[in-house]
Length: 245
Image (tube, rainbow, N blue to C red; front, side):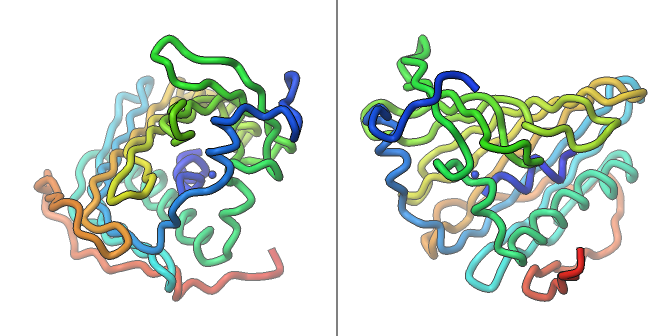
């Protein structure tokens, strides 16, 4: 489940027709300054309430024309969660980068129908999202845009398709900010209803060091809670994808 949610970071009701989209949505769909490269420190946390287990991990992540790379800086808590949840999520993102399939989950008319829902109490423009297909990484819910320029602030909703029989429902909340002049994700929170294990939560926060070659911050990993073995850099450009699957 977490692999699906994290990989999709870097994307019916009366749908808005091509000719009747509100201007704020048109400005959003018109595109944005492209992310050519970045280096960021991610802080990952997960907790299973019923099993009363939790874990965290700080990871250096980089992306550029050669692909996506990550290196674990520090970690603590449940080894099972770190291996089966965090590493699996990073590997899923690495595979998407290597296979060039990110466009299949982007917020575009090819993937979604849109509904003008007016404005939320804070004043942000509220646009409903209805996936055109029941794909695993598409979100059924809403996007919230700044009315003055169509800038994306938040995505809220649930995954259009459950990741598995055991995971029946996944709610997500992603937040974005302008960093170095580029719209970048700054946080992700998801809550999953899992058979047997009950409710599980997963959060990610992003602290950027560089965006498109511009220095924007100096994040520092948290100290490890225990002695961990050295971590190797994992690079999507070295990933071999089996085309038969």
